[in-house]
Length: 174
Image 1 (cartoon, rainbow, N blue to C red):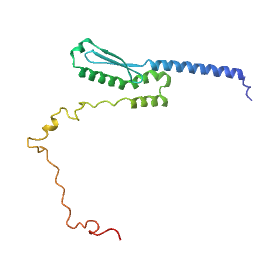
Image 2 (image 1 turned 135 degrees about the vertical axis):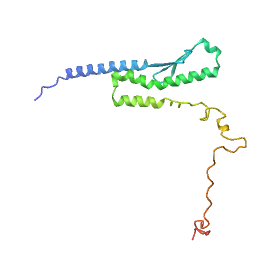
Image 3 (image 1 turned 120 degrees about the vertical axis):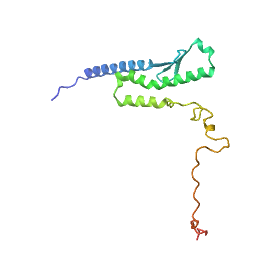
């Protein structure tokens, strides 16, 4: 027969265990809140930083950008923010690895974060280009007469002469 359990000792042990879990959760939350991903342009003039949710938290613009077109700068900012957002899930995984690494909770967290991020643009994609590398590529596929250079699909074959129009031309109601 086992010895009786001292309820006061059991409660102290349980409270100690809960205090340890609370401290661990506080550390994990602090580390998660510290996650930042920064991306810089190749010339170093644009730098964007996003937090653990992928929200833009810092934007640095260099003085040399005053000479560039505003829409080009805006496009670079958006591109860099998207790249940084795409890296957030991996940064969160690295930060959470000591706490929940290798668990279903980690897999769920990372999967949800990746699903919330914008998809990567395919290589060679031109925004607003309709899939063509330049605006005239579609027009070049037609010759001066407006006839396509590529062959047309063969014409549809005629209906067979013995087609009875499904019901012989009569009513289907009796």
